Amino acid sequence: MISALKRAADRSARTPKRLWATAFALFFALSASWSVATPLGGSPDEHAHFIRAAAVARGQINGPEVMVPHVVAGIEGKFAETGVRLPQWYTELPSQHDCYAWSQRTPASCAPAIGGSEKTAQATTAAGRYHPAYYLATGWPSLLVKGPNGLYLMRLVSAALCSALLAGAVVTAAEWRRRSVALLGVFAAATPMALYMGGMVNPSGGEIAAGVLVWTALLSIVMASDGQLLNRRLARVGIGGLVLIDIRPLGLIWFAGAVFFALLLQRRGVLGQVLRSKALWVWTALLGAATAGALLWAGAHPDNSVINTPKTLTMKEAARQTFGNTETYVQQMLGYFGWLDTPAPALTWLVWLGVLAVVTMLGLVYGRGREVVALLGMLLAIVVVPVVAQTLQAEKLGMVWQGRYLLPFAVGLPLMAVMTAASRSPEGPAGGFPWRRLTGFAVAGLALAHVAAFFWTLRRFAVGTSGPWVPFAAHWAPPGGWVLWTAVYTFAAFALVLPALARDRESDGPGGRPAEQDEPVASAWQHGPRVPAAR
Image (tube, rainbow, N blue to C red):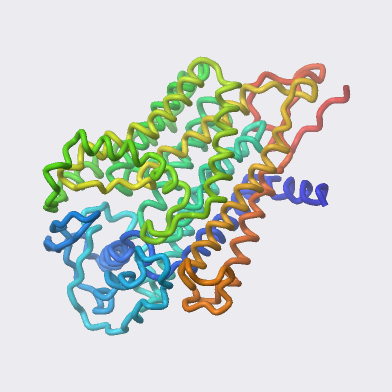
């Protein structure tokens, strides 16, 4: 059985194209399962993103400002939303979740049916200030399919785009000599929350997936340099960077943070090689143009919302509350579903935090000077960045920070840790570490955590948290039924173990000795795995 799994793993990673297709199919199955198994409007602010995407697809990039009363975290105010003209049934979306959101015991069956009136009416969206690129990419299905089916199709398009970015990160990690270790970093970064948001119409999903790709490609460039792979890695950084920068204003900060840590971790001579590459300057120009466009767009679309924040919410108080919420923000990065009303089960958090703790400790043990500083700096940043961000905006917007906002940046922690360990740890059976076995058990544990989070959330929507553990008599069920999507999700989650079990490319130096740790590895994938010399 084990031998058969290893053979299947090696076949899945035989060529970059085959590995990308395999990873894309599995990630899409996971994100698409979330797309179908979540009630329409059952994720944070999705109604606003549905309306924005449908409007942009119809050419309505801008619209009149409409002040809409809102209550956020118990604080009253008026949000500056954008008015658009859409079929009348879109105006029903903002209230779809009202009867069950923030009430875990209530299943989603209480939500009213979405109407079918195509009569044009004004709808408002709080996402009208966001850059239109993401919404153009996901909103076009609403022109082809009407009603709820069109909304599900928009979700699936978002799932496909995010899965393509994550598959690019998988291929990049597999270019490492110890690809099983590097792949563990990608799979640890792709938390249940990341895949959940990827399956929704929400720019957070694309932002997180792009962050994983940018971090993986940047770290590969500076820590495992290879002239033959440089241009394609720069292209992945460029593609991920364009998505990050154009998707939301925070994306530029997350991209800059990834570049900072990459420069901190660069190996000797790498920067000069990169600076001599023509591809670098092409992508720099494109990213510069995207940055200018994003800044101009943000400057032309300010947030004029008026929030009646209490006088007691000072900057000092906001900092204190945010620091106290650190554990909650970490849990939200791993899995807090619905309208932040459905936490993942304890099993998901314990397994994921356990894997993160192990890989981080290995990175600290095997890392040297700047690598240890970078890992400790990232741990500090995960705590400090939300405090600073929330403190600066609390008096104007209130306490609105969510853990998923930081996730495009925080994915750098497991990636830095595993890539440090992969490049610095001793090789060979005498001084080596059972990396492949560790990776197999870790990814299998992550798969179990994925399935637990998915089933727990689907059960919450089907019967509520007070309902039976196995929702045979479901009050609400996704298209196709909960059994089908639980099976699809379980298969795809455990199938991700296969790429992680693929044979590492341990290149041999002269006389059968292990090659230098940072030796280029492109030829090993171009011509197939090398067979170690006889000893």
